[in-house]
Each structure stands twice: as C-alpha cells, then as structure tokens.
Length: 194
Image (cartoon, rainbow, N blue to C red; front, side, top):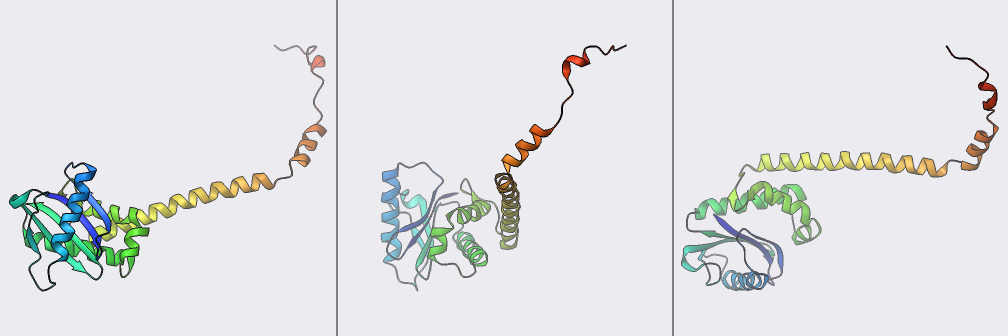
C-alpha cells in the first residue's frame, strides 16, 4: 500500500504532498525533510529504491523515487508493493502530467495544483492504485476539462443576461406601465356571473 506521495524540487521545497496515513503536521514536515535528505544525497546512477527512514516506518517501508530535471517524485510504500511496479507508476504519473501540461515543469505543479491533484486521484486513491493506463487517465482529464468549459458557458450566459437587464432603460419601462389603461374596478361589480 502507498503511504505517501511526495514531490519536491532540488532544494527540498514540497510541490505536492499526499499522505494516505495520518501523521501530525510536524511529523509530516520531518518526513519530508528526512526523505529529501535521503534521496538528494544519492547519485543519479544508483538504484531508486531505499529502505524507509526512521520516521516513515523503518525497514518495513520502502522509498521509491525518480528524479526528473528539477523535481523528485517520491512514493513511500510498505513492503507489499513491487518496486518496479511503483517505478512504472511514477513513470505513468509523469507522462500523464507531461501530456496534460505539454512539457510539465515545476511551475505547472504550483499554478495548476487542482489539476495535478485530480490526475493523482485518477491514478491512486486511499493508497491504492486505481489506474495505470495513461490514455484512460488523459481521457478522464479531457472529460473534466469539457465539463468545466460547459459550466463556464452556462455561467457566461447568466452574466450576459444580467448585463442585458442592467442596460435596459428602466425609466422607459415604468412609463409604459403607467400608460396602460386599466378598467374601472367598481364598474365590474355590476356584471353578473352565472
């Protein structure tokens, strides 16, 4: 089971943090610092698997990571997960981000945080892997984008209607109401209904 997904830059600044096990905020910060220290010291040509640090669960847990340009993608998992399977999952996650953002970079993770979270939720939820097919994930993202655009269109129609009402000449309309001749109501009383 996946315990945490961490993405941080070369300086240790977190860009995405997702814990699937409850930790206090102080403990989360310590885990992030310890994990960054463990993976940032390693050369790029060594194995991408580590035994979990003392805070994340020790020898029963593994840290599996990939370093792409300025970002570290780190998955903290228990011993039941396959290292190669998680490496493949990281690859699918990065390729999906790359496809959705056209050459993903650190700024995409910062400015499109909601979309990155949605992609992650399509990939993994509650520490369990849901989908590993990048095409299926991209299809869901495109469906979400279409839905957002259609909702924006509805909102745009509403704002156009409000603008039209505001631009109407209210004094002209009220004058027309005053000009309408209404029948004299007391004279209606003499009419008999069957």
